[in-house]
Image 1 (tube, rainbow, N blue to C red):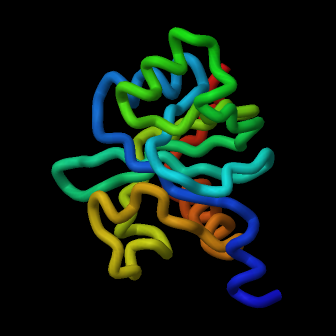
Image 2 (image 1 turned 180 degrees about the vertical axis):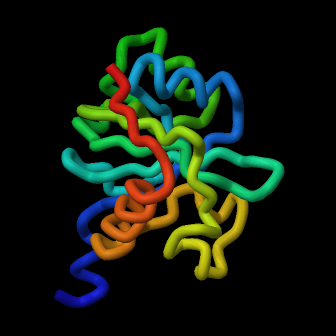
Length: 145
C-alpha cells in the first residue's frame, strides 16, 4: 500500500483550543470542525489540547458520521454559519487519555508540525497504530459513555 493509499483512511488530528469545546466534545461526543476534510465513518480522530509543556493527545474518537451544516436543525445551522463551522462530527466511540499523552513522546513528535498546524493534520494507518501503542504503554485509556 502506498503512502497516498494509507492516507485515504481518513484519520486526523483535531486541536481543541477552547476549554468550552474541550468539555463539550467529551460530554456530547460531538465536535464542530471549521476545516474541510473527508470526514468518513470509521475514521479515527485524535484530539489534541494546547498545554504549557507542549501539545498533548487528550483522547481519540471513532467517527460515526459527519453532518454537513446545511443538514442540521435551523438553530445549529445558524450557529455553524456564525462560527464558520462546516458541520458536526458525531463520534461512535470516544476515549480519553489520563493523563494526556505529550505529542513529543509519540511518532508525531518527530514531524515538523507544531501548534496550530496539528489542526486537521492527516495520519497514516501506521501513525495511528503507533500513537495507540504508545498511549497503551504510557497512559490510561477510558471510554467515554
